[in-house]
Length: 211
Image 1 (cartoon, rainbow, N blue to C red):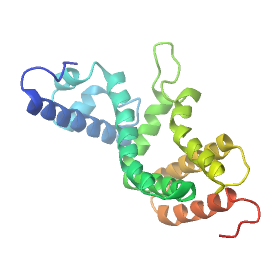
Image 2: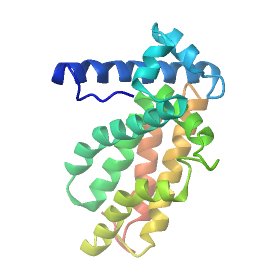
Image 3: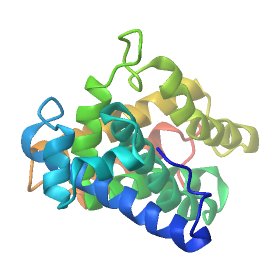
Image 4: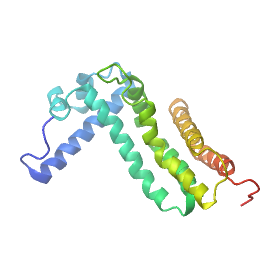
């Protein structure tokens, strides 16, 4: 891949970034249609209406393209969720904002999430190990959620529980909701989000708390 710091300056970088996003979007569509294994660079290029060489200009190969697909979705998800969580007051409201915003993002990007899931399950590193589906990768994802749990316990908003276990429980049901959204076209994410917020609101409360 060529550097974006070459001729053309900021405008050139903007154009190259737009092209990269176009290629990633086409990869998402192709994976959704034929699956990760059949999503060749040739098929992605055809879907995007470009030559395979254009993809090679921006990405070193299929593995890099798929890696950037995953990274872009995580970055986009973080950009969507962060302001909503930071605008919430107190750990309890931050937890509820985390759940609501995460599920809303999944509902608005179901095809992308389906493609990402396929990539995460199949993409391997040089040693043949899953590149993203690892315990280390999970720790990075749930770290902010664990901090919300611990902050709630420090301030007395939350009761006694293992913050790591609770954070994993939240992530597991969110990932499960993503799977249902992929499998069930009529899945009501709004209703499910409201249900999960009630469940974890109760689960994190101090014993005897009623508001």
